Image (cartoon, rainbow, N blue to C red; front, side, top):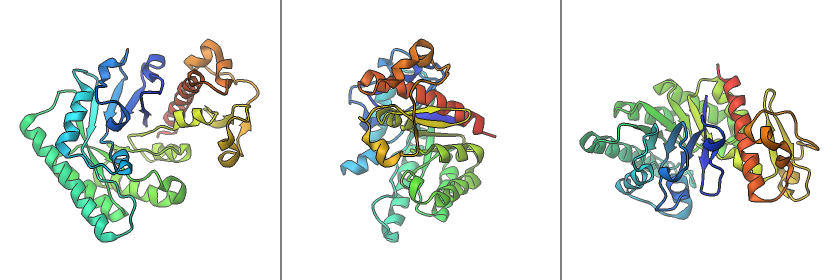
Length: 299
């Protein structure tokens, strides 16, 4: 399974360390003037999603044409293979079925608009569309996926799963399996950080997934190692969240053998508890090991 790391301005440029890195960018997470060509090197593949989750949290609702214009500005004249998500509508903040049904319909309306628009106006040759599957049940996920396929979409992304990672893993997996049954393996899973779940998604044949897990773990003083997968804590009381949420993890007194680019240069830097430079180095290390772990888990 391919793993895309979610990127913001303050994160390391992963492809400078790992040329095969795949990256996801959300328009709300970069400035209005930022373009991909500002990176000193390009990732192997890129997804520019709709930023719907961030827009939802901020109470903003852009128009589909505004989002597409923003995505095209982000891409600029870059020729890397890039997936664009249409403006999707998250299934968050309510259990009212009538409201959720309206969101399903609105999501499909946005997808239909984009499919029609690019049929008339076209897109750069390196851009592929991802139809975003938004549903609030197994049945609505299946229905939405089939509806997107009927519009001509051949790549898909499944959203509104992040909060289920901890609360209802079995339902999450049922929805993923419904999407796979409806449209086949060309499904990308949006925003799932749990490594256990990511491994399971790789095992059942999901094509790709994204999250900001390597960076988030690095901020909390966490380190990944793979084959077998292990998590450790940097030895510092600075990271109080580990005490609350990751008490099971061992403190790492010294770096383990590792051939990631950071450790090949100086693995001791991973154990520096504070400073953005060291957070970013841990993030690169964590990304390297998460990718390795998911490659092994894939069938």
